[in-house]
Amino acid sequence: MKVRIWDGNNKRFEYPEAVELNAGIEYEISTEVKDREGTEVYVGDLYQTLSKTGPAYQVFLKGGAICGGITEGDAIPLFWELPGGEGDENSIDDLYPTTEWFTRLAIVVGHIHEKEDLG
Image (cartoon, rainbow, N blue to C red):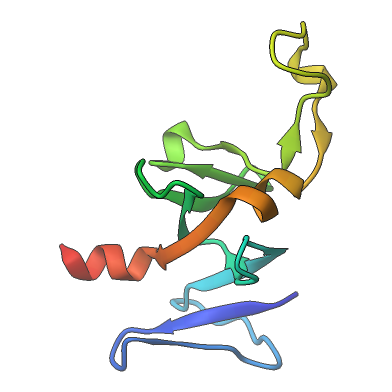
């Protein structure tokens, strides 16, 4: 499992080789997925779709699933897709795992710590 740790004093990430869990340290887990530009995506990253015209969405770990949303409350699973085309009748039971749409259309534009620094 790859993680990173935010060093708030130096405003940068540390990428430890070995992880020793310590209380009070916030670890950000790698999704092991890369965005359109080849940037590895971590929980806490902010991303936009290719057009970069909409809001930045945050990557969350929610209920054991990697999710994306403006807030954790509205976050939905990121790496799942419905079979078929637009207008097809599908249910939540038809979802299947995929990272294809994310690696084609999403771009990491920052991380939650930059958002916090902006106030």
